[in-house]
Length: 151
Image (tube, rainbow, N blue to C red; front, side):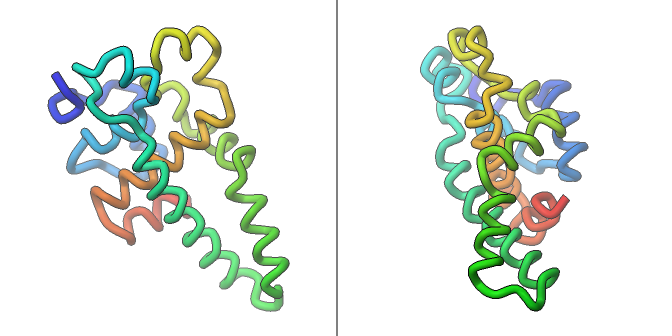
């Protein structure tokens, strides 16, 4: 069974609720939640990991945050907007959001990564959140991703 065939588990369904998005193609969310360690241990269940979706989600989040800051801080210059965006899209900022909405509980990790506390590692949480936004972009387009990232 690959990501294409696997149903979403309870943690993934709760995450969808928190993101305010229902996937037409649930395999995209499973891809987004799949760490490389899981893919390496279980290629039969996970032929892909979240790295490509993370790349896409990073760009979407940057655009959403830049757009919101541009509208909210009309008197801010480029430097101030850049600093504010950097604070919001930092590993720390994204991992805090990811932890709050339950990304860690839904991640698919290899045994070693799980034993070493991977569900709580800021880098993994931030990366998985970015991948989730990338998955929403692929599944529902720019408006859906904008709304999920804005939340």
